[in-house]
Length: 217
Ligand SMILES: *Cc1c(COP(=O)(O)O)cnc(C)c1O
Image (cartoon, rainbow, N blue to C red; front, side):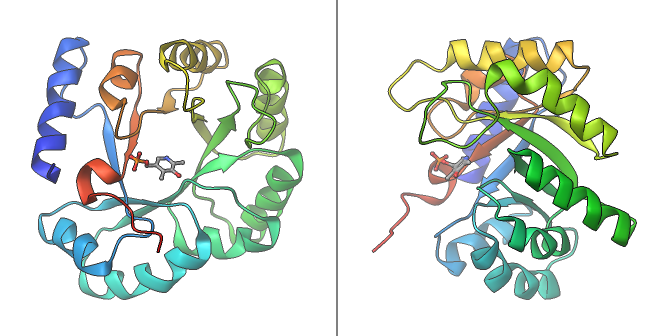
């Protein structure tokens, strides 16, 4: 699968959902991928990338930024409060705001810096004990808390349980975003981004379908 094919599939899914072309942002998830593969995607003109670990992101993106203009980096993985400052230095968006303590830390740093990346609240739509995210019942309250803290919350994010059909989770996330007046929906990965688009995804996070399988060895 190539970048061009994924972009064509996104355009087709947008059209089928009756949504304007370009309404879905493709985040190319480059975690664990060798730099040569990432560079191919940069050379093809793509500029929006996702990383799930701050440490790893810090090890490659300052170097790529010296060579390519206009890179937008999205942090999509769990964020420790002691890495928040570094994440804010590196990224234009953080998709994993998942607890009050992190929200408070981001707010304090945002005040100090006078700027903050776009933020998404991660929702644990499947209520999986091992997974990060705000429980569905607590989302409205947490959105309100973040607004009180003046955080730029752009939308909601979810990672549906692997063994479940994702539609219900996408629909739930869309409903929670709508009732909180949030336009952004970060949902859909390599296996289900077209379905996510049909449920209103504004940001899809696609890794292996663009870069190939990740080699953790
Ligand atoms: C790795 C990752 C992705 C991309 O997964 P693929 O199945 O490779 O597309 C998307 N979202 C998050 C949060 C991830 O950690």
